[in-house]
Image 1: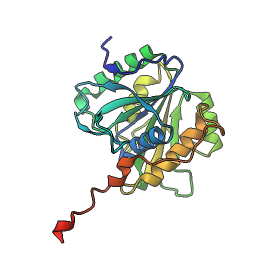
Image 2: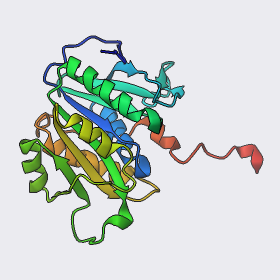
Image 3: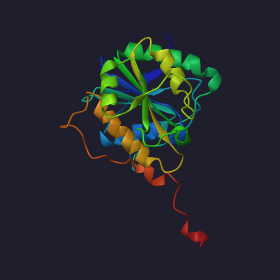
Length: 237
């Protein structure tokens, strides 16, 4: 097995839940992961490298005063919640996607994770009845299905999700080896912070890792101050 996960903080991750965002409409999955990391103070667990991941590098998105760097694909962990989340800040090369997903599956198996959630979004104009829930799911995990049904999310067939990126392909690869759920929200491009807030509210309701005692008021990452770019320089006026 090719190891693509470079662990920087060794922790026993047996029976953890693994969350993966798909690059999709409004980057809602990635924003949700950022909000989760910031609110529940996850720590960096590992970096992931594979030729399928378009390389990128930046400063620390959670601390403006940090000298740490952020790369295209990283894992963050919360030991108390028994959660590992993958943050993907770049795209996936389509021709290399399937080999990457298969290798990722092997690596997640090696970590001992018991459950996977894939977070994605779809074009809002595909929601033909706006009175219905904006959340949809595909799942082989009955406990997740029951909780999603209780908040009026609706099941969908595993077909193409327009604007959903690689979510359905990844789900098809993982579902035979794990309890695996794909959760989708209809969204539009623009200010997608409200979408991320609503998505995280759903996550905290469907995962047994969360309870009333550990739920918190959401804390926005410092990098969200620059979602629409830096303020214009004064000297242009």
